[in-house]
Length: 186
Image 1: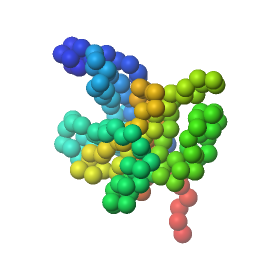
Image 2: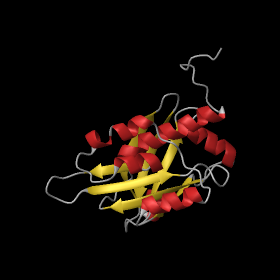
Image 3: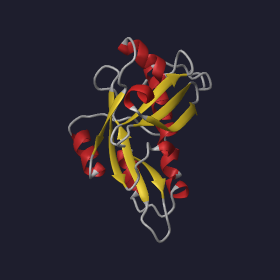
Image 4: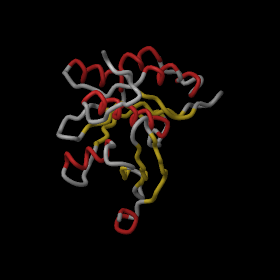
């Protein structure tokens, strides 16, 4: 549909498997490159996409991305104002320096605010980074993404799985999914 009617082109395909569910996603971009959309498909009937379709009663917009020039101040201000953000597993932050050596960001601050980082680092050249974070659902099943681009124009491919896992973790916390591998409480 987007290819035929709007001349969008596919720029990336994802097949993500979480701990309990999965999804397939096709990242599309407009001819001018200013509009980017992921088209997601559920792999099973309990995934976050299936939950969204059920809550929304059909297809629709899952989230809206908003750009910022200072994601740290924006996130802090929104948290102070009462906005809740998706959590990310601590090991994500433990692995940042290995995944993106010489990235130049403060990992302690990324961890404190739960901001994700992706991109590419280059010795002797400018890094291409993308910083992003996602709110919890704020309007029915819809949530927001805050994104700061520091030379990276991608979709945060390295963070896609981290986002998927954080939403899946939230589904477990809310009782939508049952983690059979978790020890039973006495």
